[in-house]
Image (cartoon, rainbow, N blue to C red; front, top):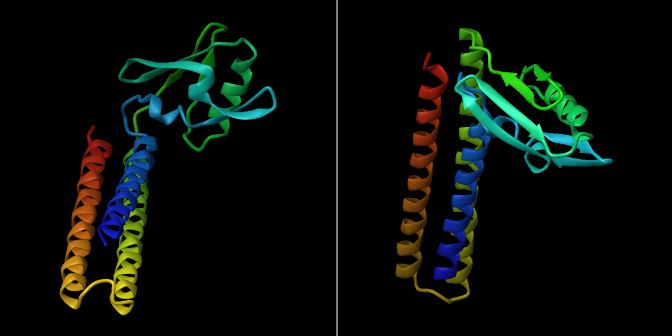
Length: 184
C-alpha cells in the first residue's frame, strides 16, 4: 500500500516537473537558453536538440549567443530557430549566432499568461488523474481484502493531501511565471 503512495508521489512530481519545463520555454522579456535548448535542428539528417550541437550562453539580459561546434550546423540551427514559434530572428556572423530578444508587447504578454495558465491547468488535471488512479488502486486493495477500511480511508486522505500539495505547487509556479512575464 505504501508502494501505491510512492508511485503517486513520483507521478505527481512528474506532472510538476513537466509544468516547470513548459513554463521555462515561455519567452519572457529576459534572454534564457531554455528557449533555444529543446529546439530540434536537422543535423546530418537527424533531428537533434540545439543544446546538443552548440554552446549556448546569455551574455546579457537581452541576448542569446549560440556557437555550434561544427560549421555544418550553423544553417540547421538558424532554420530551427526561424521555424520555431518563438518569433526570434537569428543573426549569423560566421562564428556565432546571436539572437536579440525584443521587448514583449502588452498583447503578447497577455497571450503568454494565457498559455502559462493552460499549461498549469494541464498539470493540475494530470495530478487529479493520478489521484483517481490511486484511489481506484486503494479500492481494489480493499475489495481484495489486502487493507482494512480504516487503512483505505487513511490512505485516501493521504492521497488527497498529496494532490492538494501538488496543485498548490502548480499554482505557485504559475504565479511566479505570471509575475515574470508581466514584469517590464
